[in-house]
Amino acid sequence: MFDILVYLYETYYRPDACPAPDALARKLSAVGFDDVEITEALDWLNGLNEMVGAEMIDTAASTGTRFYARQETDDLGSAAIGFITFLESAGVLGPVQREIVIERALALDESPVTLGKLKIIVLMLLWSQGKEPDALMFDDLFGDDDEQVPRLLH
Image 1: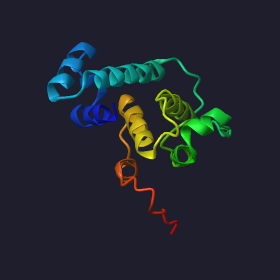
Image 2: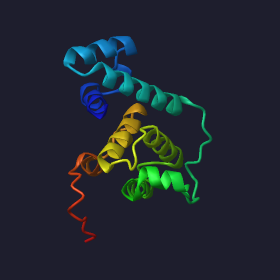
Image 3: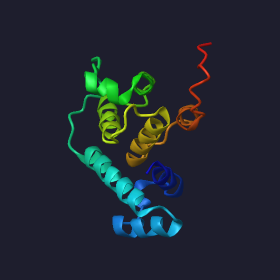
Image 4: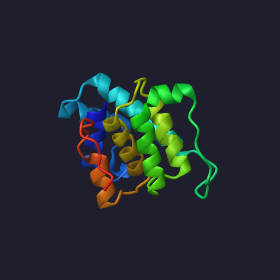
């Protein structure tokens, strides 16, 4: 599924440039993606589009702290929660966007969510909203996910 999401990001500059779901499914199948993966990806994207398009209370100026329930902590994992917190503190994600990322990550039925997959979720959210991350953030989103090498603070 994530290969399809990356393919869509790289192929279609904007989400409105994507064809209708039926035509997109045919194109993805013609490119060589598996029908089950195509269905999963389109369902996941539909869920993302519903959340992005829904009327949500604007909490952009919120200074509250997000507390994670035990199941969220277990399902997301500490690396994913740390990265979400980093993106929010860097101003890449607002509180509403954070909640969308969390919901879409929890929709994966994968525990814990890998950092690489979380980065794709964030990228797809920004893409669906017509936002492009700046160059440094783009490098962080598409950078090397080798968790063996610790990140230096200096």
